[in-house]
Image (cartoon, rainbow, N blue to C red; front, top):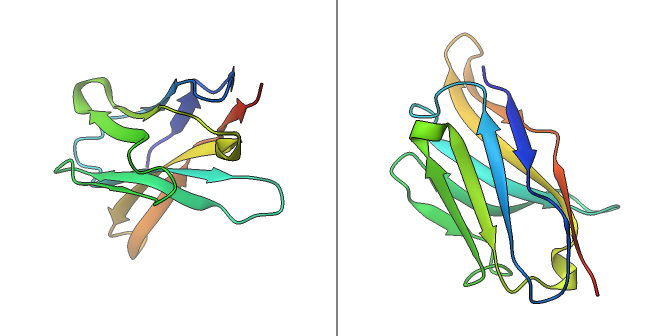
Length: 121
């Protein structure tokens, strides 16, 4: 098991930058897949970016070239650097860890509580 706490959300003007943090309650060295998702009212939660234990990254087309996901295993933290922010990036951003648990019978997802990002002038 793991608890995740996101931080760094804020109100920012279009074109601005933010860095979100996802702090885990334990070591993330053995958590192979961690990701950032976002959700707006009335819409499904969507994947923004993910990173594996080997630091292989993947991004939604809408954020490629603007967002960068990274992980610091020594700090038990995953980051999302967001540059050139647009109003359509406004959402609640969630961190997720996917962990294989034999007792659970497979992969289990753990979510943080989310952090609000608002891009507006």
